[in-house]
Amino acid sequence: MAEYTRPAAVFDARTLGKPKMLLLGFQHMFAMFGATVLVPALTGLSVSATLLFAGLGTILFHLLTKMKVPAFLGSSFAFIGGYAAVVEIGAARGLDQAASLPYACIGVFFAGLMYLVLATLFKLFGVKRVMRYFPPVVTGPIIIAIGLTLSGSAVTNCATNWWIAIFAVAIIIVCNLWGKGMIRIIPVLMGVVGSYLLAACFGMVDFTSVREAAWIGFPFKMENTAFHVFKDPEWGLVLTAIITIIPISLATMMEHIGDMCAISSTTEINYLEDPGLHRTLMGDGLATALASMFGAPANTTYGENTGVLNLTKVFDPRVIRIAAVLAIIFSFCPKFAAIVSVMPAATIGGVSLVLYGMISAVGVRNLVENKVDLTYSRNLLIAALILVLAIGINYGPGSIVMGKISLSGLAVAALVGIIMNAFLPGKDYEFGKNKRADISVNLGGSTRHPNWRQEHPEDADYLKK
Image (cartoon, rainbow, N blue to C red; front, side):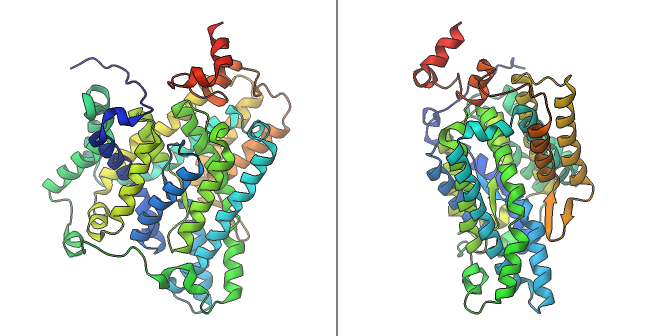
C-alpha cells in the first residue's frame, strides 16, 4: 500500500479543472443532503423548497460575505421545536398542520431578522472587542460539542445496518489516505456512492418512490408560504408564533459563531475579521428570513460541509457555490429528490460519523494551537461545563424549557461558557498577547494562503524572528 502523504491546501479550485470542481460540488451537496431533507421530513415542510432555498440561501450568504467564506447553508434543526409548538397552538384553534406551518414560518422570519441586530453590534463595536467574550477556551469546547451532539444521529443511522456504514467509512478512509488524484479529494462522494450501490445490490433500497416521482416539478406551492397567511390572517396566532420562535435565534446565533470559528480554524483564515462576523451573521439571518417566507426551513451554516473541507483541504468557496447551484437545479427535479430520499440511513450514518468527528477534532485543534492551559482551574471549569451541558442536555431532556422558550443544550452551554469567561477572574488569554497564535488562527489569516505574506507583511516579518 502506498505511503500516506499530507495533501496540500487548495485555495483556488480552478487549478484542478472544471470537471473536478463539479465533482467537488456534488460532494458538498451530498454531504448536506441527508440532514437538510430530514428537517422537512420531521416538520412537514416541502423537501423541494428546502433544497431550493438551501441553494439560494448559500448564494445570498456568499454575496454578502464578499465570496470569501466556504460555508454551505442547510436546514436548521434548532427550530424544529418551534414549528411543533406553533402547530400545536394552531391545532387548539382548529387549524391543521398545513395551515399552521405558515404561521411558524412568520416567526422564523422575525428570528432571522434578529441576526441583523447582533450583526449591527459587531459592526459598531468591532470584532476584536466583541470576540473578547469568545476566546479559545470557550469556542474550542463549543466546536467540540457541535460535533459530539450531532454524533448521536450518525450512530443511530449507522445502527440500521452497521456493515453498510462501516463500508462507507472504509471507502472514505482509503480514498482520503491512499487515493490518487481526484479520488483523494472526493472521499465523501465515493463513500456515498459506494455504500449506496452496495446496499442496492443487496436489495436494501426501495426505489418505488423514485419510479413514481416526476422528472420536473415546481419546488413549492404558494398556499404553503407565509405570504398566503396575510390573505386572511389570525393576528393572535401571528403574534404568538413570533414570540414563541424569536428566542430560538439566541441559540442559533451562538451556534453560528461556533461554526464560523470552526471554519476559520479549519482553513486557518480568520473570517471573523474578514469579511467580518457582522457579514456572516447578516448572510445567515437574511437567508433564514428568505427561506421562511417561501415555506422552507430556517437555514444555518452546515457542520457537515466543514467536515468535508477538513477532509479534502480544498478551501475554495467556488466549490460551495457550485454545490448551491446544483441544489437549486435539482430542487426542480422530484425524481432526484426521491433518489436521495431513499438513500440508506446507514450510508448517511457512516458518512456523518466521519464528518461530525472532524468537527470535534477541529475544536481540539483550536485548543491545542492556542495553547489553552487546562491545568488552570478557571479554564478547566469553563471547558468542563460547556461540554457536559451541551452533551448532557442533548442526550437527556433534549432542551431546557422556560415558559415558551426552549434552549438546546448547545445554546445553554454557549451562554454559560460566555458568562463564566466574562465574570470569572484570571483571564489568561487576550487578543494580541500571543502574536503567533493570533496570526495562525485568530487575527491574521492563514500563513499557508498564497497571498498571505503580501497582505500581512508586518506579521510575516514577525514570524521570521
